[in-house]
Image 1: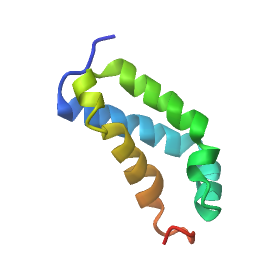
Image 2: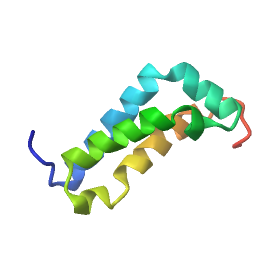
Image 3: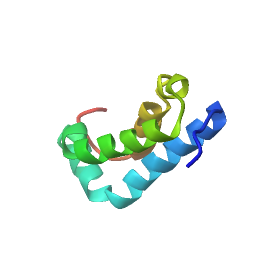
Length: 87
């Protein structure tokens, strides 16, 4: 596999990984938000995605936190309609 060297491609990859996490772990996400344990219940999945992202982008791009931003946007912000302790 080729290493990603552009910011746009790194953002797309981060969002694709986070989107997959959201798609395949909806119940865990809802439970984690409702109980304020999202990072605990998805720790393994989030870290697996982080490892994939790290392996596909340059160190410079990894250090820009695109993956963490995608996790927040797609797993947390997009669920703003869910009643939880965060808001």
